[in-house]
Amino acid sequence: MGFLRLSDLRLNGKRVLIRADLNVPQDDNGAITDDTRIRASVAGIQLALTAGAAVMVTSHLGRPTEGEFKSADSLSPIAQRLSELLGVPVPLLRDWVDGVDVKPGNVVVLENCRFNKGEKKNDDALAKKMAALCDIYANDAFGTAHRAEATTHGIAKFAPIACAGPLMAAELEALAKALRDPARPLVAIVAGSKVSSKLTILKSLAEKVDQLIVGGGIANTFMLASGVRIGRSLAEPGLCGEAQEIIDLMKGRGATVPLPVDVVVAAELSARARAHQVAAENVGPEDMILDIGPKTAEILAGVIECAGTVVWNGPVGVFEYDQFGAGTARIARAVADSKAFSIAGGGDTIAAITKYGITDKVSYISTGGGAFLEFLEGKKLPAVEVLEQRGN
Image (cartoon, rainbow, N blue to C red):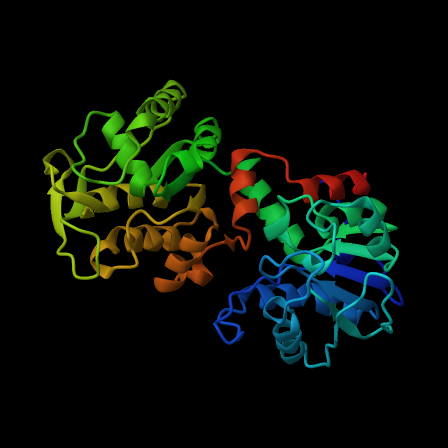
């Protein structure tokens, strides 16, 4: 990929504006409940600081109304957490578009970029003002790369130099390794409640992967398309035709979509629901399929353990309830034990990885939800495309 990297540039004495993804969850009192994205952003900020740059960092947080300041959407707690992680003072500047005073070797946080009118519409006038604040613009927010906004796209057009921060660069390199020049066999795990929400991803991957593992409500729809009765399970009967097309496309390439041979069912979806294992062909009319069965889990684990590359998006069962989590736990263990290059993304996937304690066994965990999915679809990401244009 032909973009400049922050790590390759001379930064001493330069004004560096970093677009980070600091959109972290908070409780009702504004306390940060998960600082993963903040910690992931530290490397890029520290790189610029250590090199002697005057560093400015901005991000969105929540969904504020442009032009209206709301304390609930302020980056104040993020600036405080960054100060703790960096071990230096990190002031928060509220009105910053018309000028920022920061000395080399220091860092400031620029208040929620979505407070500025024109941010979401990618307004050129706003982007030019922001670009005038810096000598170097670095996008280190892969999680927002699928959005063309003033701080993710517009500013990159007008800044003297536009580059990728270390987090952005690492994400793109990992995704390219997994999808553009993968070690074979390439196995994709795509699970979720609805085929419709991931249909374009499934179609795109069906043209690339050697085996496509489907799970959750998506697997139910594929089972239904294959003539298997699924009782009251979540599915989209109207998309059985598309599911069958994907199966046929894979078969035509000599690839496969392995479907469950056994499943875990219950009469209801609740923490108290009683789980039962049944063969896939024995699902009753009142049953709800809530996980794959142990035989299926072992078959899929075998596929994963022989893979050269694994791309994982979505747990294969309702793992939030332990009685329906064995399938996802076995998949997680297989990914951890595999010698394949593995990349995982999506909030539920990361939650499962954390629950089953394999964080350090996955080759790369993507911080981008929507951007990760759009990359899997084969879409061009606006924030990446503009960096490539500037790099060339």
